[in-house]
Image (cartoon, rainbow, N blue to C red; front, side):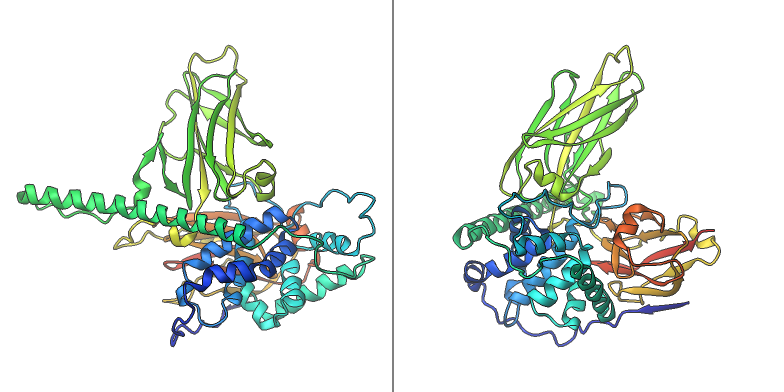
Length: 501
């Protein structure tokens, strides 16, 4: 069995910025249409594609002055990585499948349209195979460039391309590539992207202002009472503020709406202007007697999802409570899209009879923030201990760690065989994302937005139906590569992989 690390990226001698910020508007207006087609081929939905493109352009703006030469490759990388992240969910959330669901059949006038047939065939491919084909044959990138964009090896790129083409060959009538129509580009898209950038600026200014206010208060307090010699501790961040008992910032999200439901017959409603379709909901329940509460979230576009909450008289009225999220396409089908005003109704039912005398359901909605905009807490002097959750004592356990001083290097293990179940524990003690891949296909992501010890558990079970759909070509006995691809890691991490049985 071998453990290997990916080659270190060249960080020295970085090129000096040459792209002017003033070119951004021209780029969006003149060149975003091509990127929109890339987004469409990845998502197979124009609304999703437009949201994906606008999110990617807003992210690119933060680094625009540092881009050298042609900015399109940089923006394209952001777009593909953002697309990948849209289908990632933390371990304690519902996990969507790797593919978008198949679209409804076309009407009779489009039944023999070659391009429509190809779009459907692409949609049936696993997500990374689809991304490889789009980048290789639509964007005309080399295998090395695709490997760099997706964070996988060139050999894995070749494998994905070969498997994808083999699957497409069995689909009849595949002759075209580009979709028929697209939404209008130009000034409308530029205005939408500008609004997102402005919203991001306002959030950053609000965070800085809150930190400055607290620091100023501490300084004034010290000036008035110098005898106490109070040494202020590092600011945690704006996330320390509570709204209706929920933290304003948590788990990479910013709270955008909150409310309380107390009447089983009358739904509570909240509204907000959405900036993304990547949302999570938080719920806390309290009742005068112990009971299970069934909660339903709905919008004008239909039901979003349901949760079950355990309520007791001693249930806390502060904190996150229970957290859940749903696949992006389901959220968008419910009408939660960037720029839309959303009205969400929250209703609940109680199975216990007679009904408890007092019941309350606190709920909140959080929107995913760009990593660069999230108000992370200050780094402590001493970090928490990494925890294997007991796996380090397991027989034949494999332990993966990044090289010293470079926590963002990919670490791979080879020599493992497909067919048995592997129990995995991913442990972090600083902000960062750990993407777990099997044979180059991402199977889960563990995210930490604090300096607390945080762990995610995951079972790589070949009998799991969702995993089999992602890895259809793996056969029992095949050698399989399991890798950890870190992103934004602020400190070292550890992953334990223990074979079962």
